[in-house]
Length: 428
Image (tube, rainbow, N blue to C red):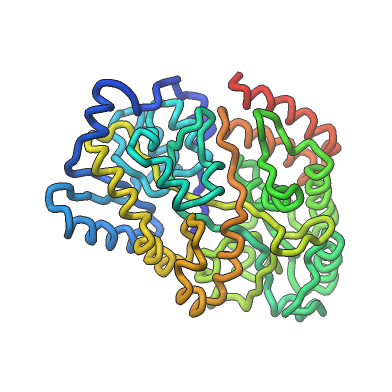
């Protein structure tokens, strides 16, 4: 699965007008009870699209009077910009299988989403399927405006050939603590085994922190989100320790400050990358790889480490008129059978509490995915708070200034960003 690039979300978020949640009163009650044909949008990712078309065919074969018409998400700068525009125009489809959790607060503010709690047993279905992890996907009003669908828990991928060339153990590399990681990174660089030890995008888009700072912050703090109880959490000893670890990597040239036009890991310019299970198929034929958890300052055991989810979810949009059908389709498409087909087709992890026990044959045959499945129940999501995108942008700006480019001390930059984030999270 390629990462979504929702760069236009920031512009979008500034333009949103406050609205209702799309789930109550009059026409909404009528729509919630109505059945009939619906339209859905699917991701344009090839493997997900194949799964989606097969799922739709299976549903349509059993529901002649409630047929699904499936389309790829229309082209645009980002899926989120396209969805936001469709909400504004009032022509969003009933369901979209590619709704980014970071976009939910904006779409909800637009009045574009239906609370799934408005369906009989809706909240219970989500809790039963996803378990405790589902709590992270509730909105501040306590309702679900998204159904947790699939995650890509991120780990450190490393190139075994590059590690061997650098004189590092390619089978059991010492990467669990910051000190070990830095020692390995310095050896990779000094040996000339690769141009970079690790090469996260050094650019300023708000979502880039999900693939450098945030996974390590989740691991270091035992699962703290960037914002909790409307307060920034990153300006803490743990947050500053993560930032200073990355600052060392940038300061010593172990992680380059220039953008790379391509995939540095696939092109063997970088020895390591932070990626999810989608990478198994993408890199499998190109790189002899291994995977380890992201590092922590003290080298926590793998079973205690939490990581970023990189999830995509399903949401119901308030333009939908046949919502009773849409809700049944949501349940059908996230059933144990369909989740198994998604796993088989894409290698991405359905957000199910019983993931490994539900699909023992898959994980027995596909051992490369088992370690990701073990992390799937220990993922940390972006916080579901007002001004979500602006919050991430404020953080990224401070991170870029202090960590990547070293123009300001981390403590000063993070303190200033925390003040901005506190204001944004309070809705101001």
